[in-house]
Amino acid sequence: MPPDPDSPDFWGRIVLSVKMTKKFRLSAIFNGTSSSSPAGDEETKKQNRRSFSLATSLKNLREGKTKSESSSNSSDSTAEGQSTSRMAALAQQIARDTEKLEAYMRENDLPIPTSDVDSPSQYPKLPEDIQRLKQDIIAATRELNRLAHGPQEYLRWGVWAFLDVLALTIINHFGIAKLWPPNETITLAELQTKTTLDPINLARVLRAAMTNGIFREPEPGVIAHTAASRALAEDDNLQAWIGFNCEDIFPASAHVLQALKAFPEATSLTRAGFQFAFDTVDREPMFATFGKDPARARRMGKAMVSLTGGEGYEPSYFVDVEKGGYDFSDLDARGGVFVDVGGSHGFICVELAQRYKNMKFVVQDLPKTIDTAPKPIHSDPQVASRIELMAHDFFTEQTVKGADVYYFRWIMHNYSTPYAVRIIKNLVPALKPGARVLINDHCLREPGAENAWDERVMRHMDLVMLTLLNAQERTEDEFRELFRAADEGFVFKGVRRAPGCRMSVIEAVWKPDEVEKEEEKKD
Ligand SMILES: C[S@@+](CC[C@H](N)C(=O)[O-])C[C@H]1O[C@@H](n2cnc3c(N)ncnc32)[C@H](O)[C@@H]1O
Image (cartoon, rainbow, N blue to C red; front, side):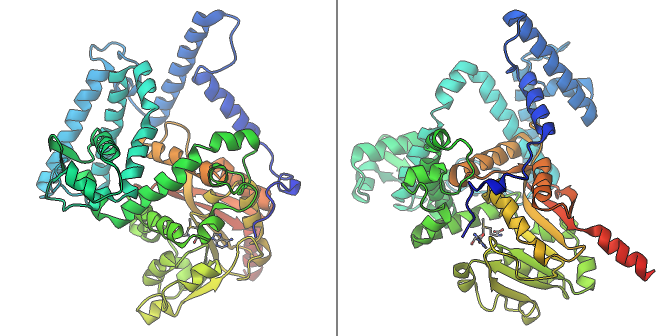
């Protein structure tokens, strides 16, 4: 069982980083949210502008940007010394980048995306520079959209984004997109006979979704598919992802405020928005609730497949050294042991075992997960024979002693600091000097350091973690602090991230000095 999150001993070693506090104050100044200035509103605004432009100049200097590059990236409406407004510059950038993207697609005989039903549901794997171009287009269109609305209008109607989720919830739950073939049309009257939704509700959710390019109405009362509605009809894992988000996360998110008001420390696994939404406060964590409901658990499992298959999350970013993955050649030469803690059905170990022919692997997870893993785990006996599946609860002491690597993928972000520290502490009795602990998770950077789209995905994931588990994504400093709080014997090695990947590998080594001393003795 997970430990009691409210037990005071968890907090004993978590020292609030002075550095973080300073950083927070600085960002408050840069964003103009510092406490009121005696110099009055106008002066405060001037100060804020100065602070902001100083911060921007410093950032540009660090990034080696020229003045013209930096001014075209500034959020000022008119760039200094230039006649092109920010909106016009964005529009030009979008046009330029779109032409480049389309040129790449044509040169490679790839279809140019449209909203038509026959347009592919996703881009093929793109080279890194083209992928970046695509993300730049997305970021620029989002900014242009904001500017074209103006702040008031943008906020007033932007807050209604939850109604997009509402329409999608109903459409996805009732499987509306699957009720007629993709290349055919259907009348609203006929569609209504295929669902339990009444005509008014069916029409209103479809027409709301159409405002987002999901379905279209080529003539009054006749419904046709688009590329987006077809994806919704045909992609099982995407349906699960949308179902999990709409029916589990969305209601839970609507209860986060209530949870934060009742339990402001927001660390307990049984006091998150999820528990308030589903009436399980102080009774069970989300995973236990799902454990009692196989259909819901299956949906979440498929949703995770959809997420992991998405751009930026493929396991190859960890496994393929050519893509910037972690190199285990030294370990392989020694026939070292790699433990995947909370490793589900062991897909990472299977990929590693295919690449490295001598290493041995242990996949640990809860008994239910281990019992349902495929057996044998792989058809090639050379691979399967080196992978052991083992039931183990990471809230108890680690049972595989003296392994070379303990690996946690998508684990730490599921837990608030007290739990995460306990998981790492549980490794300590098993660790030999030089053992590596690798955490494979998002690692948050300073605001603005990411590509705008990646930043949005990662910040949203952070809020999902709060919503479901009172957990969090972490910065490098926060990861360093986790290890420090778990035991002073860890030496934090830093964070690496493969190009194009959103996940990072955070590494700490157990008492490397002792390994060095041993080696000195041998010499
Ligand atoms: C988000 S999934 C990550 C799975 C896998 N590492 C991956 O990258 O896809 C979390 C995993 O932790 C497992 N898990 C949850 N609580 C656990 C516990 N107390 N001990 C061991 N595994 C646990 C779950 O069964 C699940 O497989």
